[in-house]
Image (cartoon, rainbow, N blue to C red; front, side):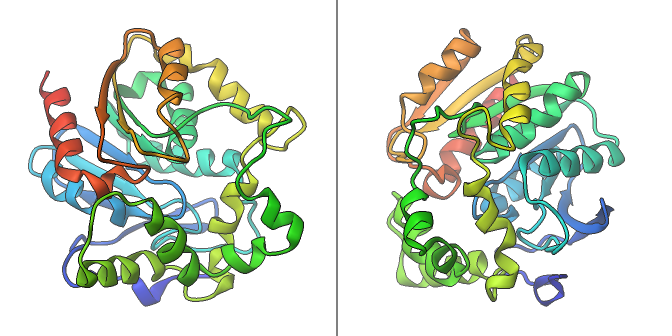
Length: 297
């Protein structure tokens, strides 16, 4: 299924970027491509899309080429009904896109599912990576006995009802993770922008699939690729990298910082006390400033 109904939508001028599409693995993958210079690739997660980085695109396109893909099933990308919405496929889609764009010396910015997907590319093509910006994400297989947030909904039969209705999920659940106080008008616009890709449950295939693809225990279908990515993170140990963390995140709480410190002991850490999971919305100016200074160094 295509999303022609939002192809040229700018959401009251807040997303004025020309849409670009590449045919990747049989579907139209949307991406923003603005500016010139060394490339910065910005990767979103669940249940967002490139709109999350609108202020980043405006800022960094003055000095860099900014690439912002929408993962399969999200944003302005197609929603193929014959694909498996799993980590391996998302990594393959991103890899094909970035290779086709012939990007090198990439500054890779990753948050939420953008972490595993982005590291999936980076660990296969470390020669194309110059810098890493890691934000509120994790790469690893959950323990078998860990209780994941959505499992009770699966058990009581309400998962499909909630995750197939982004008009309900986004304002009630996603916005509940915002720390920044937003006006009624801003909230109305944000709801319009984030709900727009999901007019009905048929368009929610990607959003429904992401939580179920969190690998738990070695028998989960995505455990093998997630573990492979985790095991290969050392291939990037000599790359410039920083960790930026929204400290009020309940999905990836601050203790996850210690996990990253075990992987990259010398990583530079920036803690943002008044930001949560969607730090791009809570503290965009601060995050942009941190990344700008990191690149200048």
